[in-house]
Length: 179
Image (cartoon, rainbow, N blue to C red; front, side, top):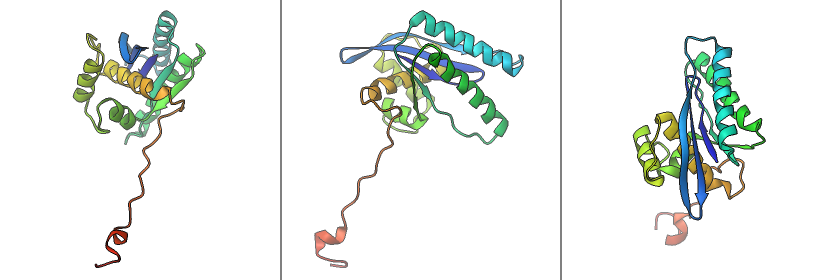
């Protein structure tokens, strides 16, 4: 399976496989676009890079991290366009693409939804021993792949959000309010 971390400048990718009850690292890297090039060329660079990786490695499934809305609308729009390319490349190879929110990826891999890049890198290295991680973007992509490996067998197109369990009414334990 391939995990993807979308970005216009750097798109991380990571390929893992499930071997029994263990995860095995196969490859990871970063597809880069040239910031000086026009947007259409940059998107084409991302697509060509991802297309070649998917053709070479032939993963059986794909997962991508969803994006967040930035304060800068122009940056958000460009990231959305890059994300479209990231979703298109595996789809053109016949792969369904699962999508996971950044906090879901972090919670699945690290155990907390607001983990920093260093914590993600450390846990990915721990879960995939011997893996040499190409970049922070590749570490994020491997984390997406690990998250997908965890949730994919549950056959959900996206990871579920945690549902809060109803709390018991404290009055029922004491026989009434103020007792």
